[in-house]
Image (cartoon, rainbow, N blue to C red; front, side):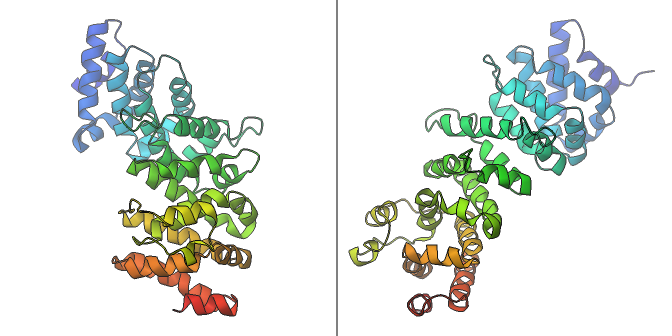
Length: 336
């Protein structure tokens, strides 16, 4: 005899729209608690395909179905099952349907699914060279076009997807491919007022800098955008003197010559400093850093910094510059 939970899951496939609506609302509510998640997990073979089918229905049904899948995918085992049944492709297909009303939830679902290597591989489409990276290009394009400072920003969580895929070497290679031009587009979103976007961009840049040993040239190809994104968050609060800004590229010098919004999130400042550290591990990276008068920026930023963990990140760079074979002038500057 079927249990109540088994009957509930069965009702998700009911031919009666009212019954189906009530069932999906109850299921969605159950996924909001740990006990509910555990009870539903027993029926995942029926539950997941049923919820996936409901994503294509009207918003009254598709929204609670999507909410349920987002909650369920926070469990790594359930997320793994979703990847196995092709949930990444389903989410991407639905995301780019003209009449979709659940874009934000689908993006959040993809954030959870790309926590695993299998989910990342599915999003990168690594099995097919002809389409590899196509999903990523679509998401980056939407991320850069959809920034809406006043309304609902359906694609702001794409920043978290980019952080996830850039933890993977194949993902970093796609993002750093100069022919695709994705990194430049992503970096430009650092100017957004959305903290989620800023943190996503910062984390993605930092992860991409793990390729500095082999792809420093591709990183520096976008230095006009890269250095402001990395150095402005750690430049402190002072307005810089002309004698300092005169030695910087225009995009940096101009920004540091006026009042600016501080980056209050210490995690973003640490990510920026870690990215700089990864770049200056390379001799050519150190030369690039000196060429924009970054030691002065780091010096001022360090003097203004109060967070011990952020200060430690400054100090790691300072130590590397002192012992990394820089010029006599640069070494003196770093040890001030």
